[in-house]
Length: 51
Image 1 (cartoon, one colour):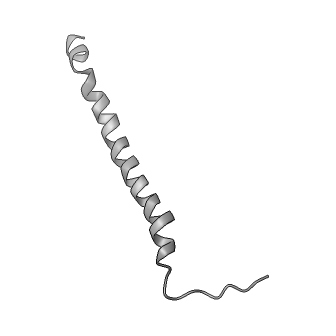
Image 2 (cartoon, helix red, strand yellow):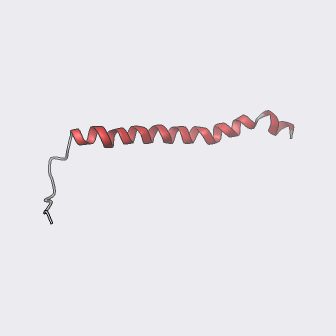
Image 3 (cartoon, rainbow, N blue to C red):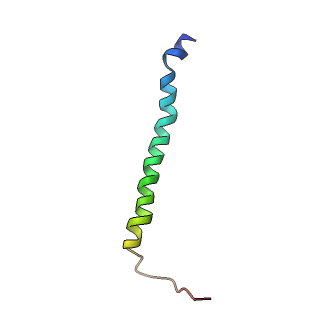
């Protein structure tokens, strides 16, 4: 049990590192989708028939 008590923080890093990386990527992706993409719409637009 001594080895587990001395190195428990390594297991926190194993969980927190991927979660942090995914969170940062999600924030960057969300920024591009919500802010950048509307500024530069696609050059072609599909016809949108009004119902």
